[in-house]
Length: 85
Image (cartoon, rainbow, N blue to C red; front, side, top):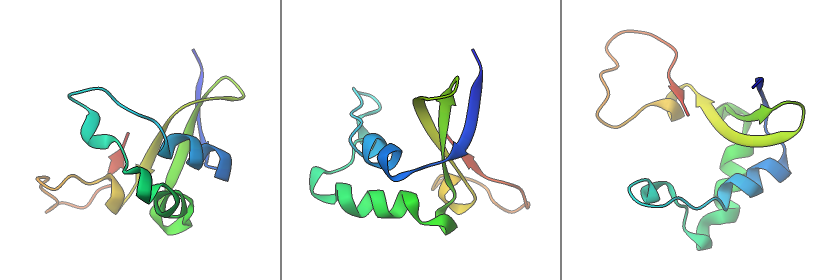
């Protein structure tokens, strides 16, 4: 399997904003009333969101780099690139 990381487009952002996860990952589910707001957040270049694609076209996931990749309980005393998948 060949995975590629590429910039998100609007179609990908809408798709991922509507993804639904079963427990115990259901805390990742976005509120339906905030979908549009989240799409704008995903597409804002400073938030560093990218799509993960299988082959040339199949959108299978996403990641973020920088502050959005941090977790609330993380130790960020040392400099580094934070990556969220």
